[in-house]
Length: 302
Image (cartoon, rainbow, N blue to C red):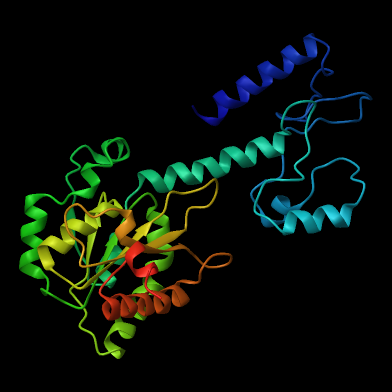
């Protein structure tokens, strides 16, 4: 639909509103998106300010609040959507538009791939899980995302160091944006931390259509002491940059989440900073090696 067609539709809607008495007839020369309301000199402007800007996100929308400063302080203390006001029993237009915009962010990061330039910069080769039907199948069949293909197993076995102390793997998970926002900073911290501790660092690689359970296949193929999987978390509404580092000691077929540890909510400005997360993951890996355990077993060790 081109601009002329869109303008024609808007003009038609305005004329219908004028005929129904909702607004006065459009003023000649005013143009699309404006019409007289009340007195002839007033204009109705359809365009609204961008609700996604930081200023609009933090502006209270409650009409005549009892304590404006208190409401602002309350809104600043949480990421929950409060102080948004209402139009009768419904959301205000601004709240609805912001919700739709943030939902679009979630959809975008779910369905797009990690930027190949990032993988090239970090020297990561790519293998794939048993997903063959793209993102739709990936979302519907998490079981297949936990298993490497036979070709992927051969590639990993041929290109990676075996029996390393620490094996780092990057997976897209449910958020490409999370991987792009954090891995570039966290990866070198992991590598330098592992090497500084006198441990061997395995050959890193990237897994497309990845689920956490793929750690078991990595353990079976490479036999590392510790696997660290950096993977994009399920995006929230407008929050797409949160990543997790799942870790396991000598993972194998049949292991579950009870056998793993995780550093979650890795992102800047509100979460665990990726630089700090990298250092923390190295400390956990050292503890796993010391006690030869991970998950619940590691937590039970005093």
